Image (cartoon, rainbow, N blue to C red; front, side, top):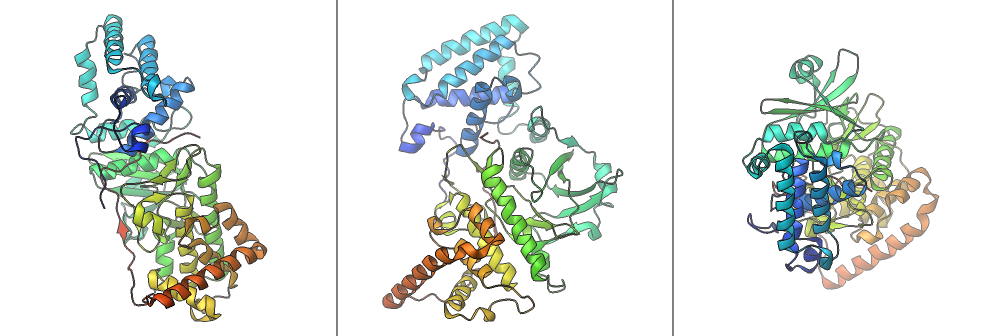
Length: 489
């Protein structure tokens, strides 16, 4: 069900979102977003994107609190906006974003402050209010997408980390003119090309066509990857914009996608040690993203097609197009639209748009079971695995070409439990993969719940239909759903 707000809907403040009702002070909250949008140079007033607005607001609040005003000001106006006016804009925005309703200024107070700041700015630089608004209009709907994307890439990493801008010729040479021989996963949502720069660095290049949604996804991925670094997470090093063609450039020697290795009958099956190495790598990547990264990231689409392997079969989790970040002390979040691949999506996410670290755990569990069975997952497969586990006939579902302990099947089943609260944490999953001695108690509890649930189904006469399969396919992000900035921890 599409819960997007209409185009002319007024963005809500955090308090009004919680209570699902508008309050008299929400307009001041919108004004703060407007101030931040002018200063940051981003479209923070797209009134149909709640998550982007709140992410932008929280990010700006954090920067103001830490005294890093330069970080949030668009480079195109840093020289023209006086330091005093910048501080006043920041103070006004901070007041409008105050978490307590009574502490926010009234609209009349906001107008007076804005008029005073603009008057000071006119005296300082002989600019007019019209000039500032003309500048803001560049980022309104219908403005230059390429200019704003380029600006975003140039500033998203802040002062400590910058993305390199590549020219198209360099990438063309590196990928041998984007040859078919260098294409990885041709049936994936977006193709990926392996290449090598003249300095010997192995890279992966992800091209895409122009479009508002693709631009938002690229910005989302960049905003996440510049802030994280882990051996099992794709490392973004640069970008290329050539007309209406955009490219992201990664630093890793990709050989193949896990999706192709599993589901392409022409590929040689992997032995269990290699499959285990891949699973452990992905689990460690999620542990880093969920617990140790500067920002807490929920990937939302952990599937074989988003896992790439180097020549040593080291896993690289990629494709953060629709990943989401949780704020400090935020355990979960509800999204109005879902993103991901059917068969890998947790029930609470698919049905209600609720995401948490347990969302990725469910996907990891499906991944584990898919690697063990060497089959593409669907609802009937998970039911089939569960039934054979209860009956002690796992040999019927495990890939006969590998020698794997049945406890790994149990780890997968623990991760795909319907109730998110019953699933292990990311830390527990990594621990179980390394040492399976801790499995006894959670497996016993799971067995009891599964048996109880099956008895209930038997009594009601509504058994699961094994023929009720659900083919795996991608659910893309809606244009109005995009997290364009992150919430620092």
